[in-house]
Image: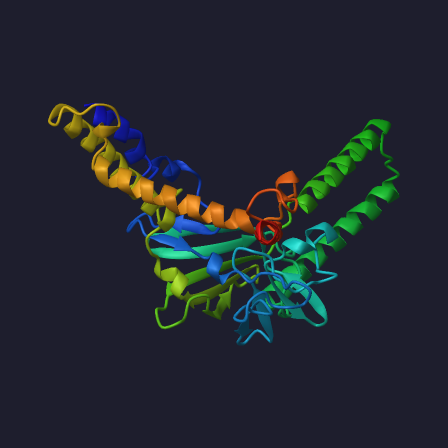
Length: 363
């Protein structure tokens, strides 16, 4: 029981944290509501260049392009991020919002935005789509407006006739000498103010261009690559449709977040092994072998011999290294003091000389 209690905190490190699943998804990622597959379009995002240089060899140096067949122009767009091309002036877009443009086209020397970030990534059944909104105003079409039809011209003529009738009525009123009262003048002023207010509110509610990109799976394309094609536009040229094929649209499985790498997992396993070895060995030596003290450790004799060998190696290394260190000379190093050192040879010579003198004296 005690062993399981001690190992419980260590085993808890190996279990993945499922609480992280409740965290919000990263930008430009989504789960399929039908297959629960995980889609990440960040691999298709073209990042700005650093000092006009690519961070990696395979990085794109420009945004994605689509040829506008039948439209007379081409389109430039990015996935889940603004385009990396800088534009100084875009029709209907404030200067502070130029950095948010995610798709645009150029027509007759002018640049038109067809959507800005943030992007909307969503599913319609099994179809994955990416949408941009808040582009240039829709009253700035891609091509010139078509001429009015006969029905429209007839309607305009009828309106002109009505205007002429109104002018005749006004002339008759002037002939009759009927003037307007002061109260009626005030009513006209109020009506004019109402018209101005309605005109101001309608100007703030301008319809703007938008982009819709339908993504399809293509397993033949390498990772980070896409094939973008233009599909068409709405009759009022306010919404533009594209189709993008990429490996990122195939979906996959999201890797569960974990706080330990390969080395961390190996370290935890090693700690568990050592804990089981020590605790299990101590329990066996104490209960079965009735050992006490340090002899309770498993394989005590082996570990003791290893420790003694390591201690001897340490002593040998320290003693050999101490000889190489410079030492301060003391009185014991003076010539004639002691048998060792530099004075040992001179002391022996003196002793031999004294012996010779003694022998000569005896003779």
